[in-house]
Image 1 (cartoon, rainbow, N blue to C red):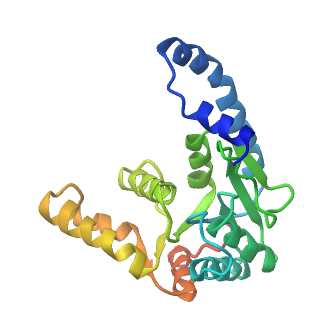
Image 2: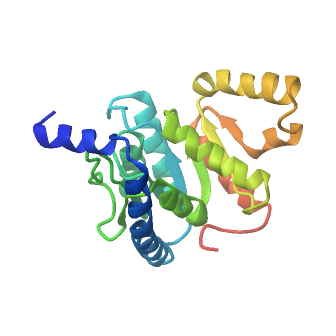
Image 3: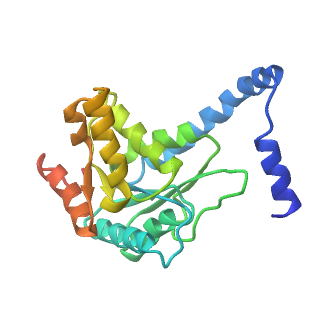
Length: 237
């Protein structure tokens, strides 16, 4: 890590006092508005897409990377574009698969202290940079026809539970959410069933129908096609 990187990270994680909070928050409104306007204008011009989430830490020879690339390729062949967080790892794999399949490849990149930059497989006119995670999440939810959630960390879980919360509470219409990898997601889902549903009743039994667990790229794409097939809708609706 060079001096510039170290300085930016220290600044990002430095606690703010109350006066800084009040001043910065007032001016941040204009930056937030500009990110919403740019996001809405650019995203409204793309065709229906499926978002692929997952860890930025997987290398291009990791099985999860290769599977994400194959899923994205199959989605592009079915007429969907692909949206990712724009960075490396699973995000890069998603954009790479869409690019290989000749489909729309969108990257919603987040500005981070360690300078995450867009991967090279995003369409030239479809890379959008954000400072605010919550603005970027609005774009994912508003312009995605489905979520495919690969193995990942806190950010991946954040996107997953945000979407399920919005659907559960009726704030948005339902769309398919697919968890890929029974080995990765099995432990979490056991806890959701045994603790949230059975022991504490903090979710309803039907909430477990908000997502589908799959283990092959074919199952992932087929589930999205089936979901919209019920309503006789196609990717260009």
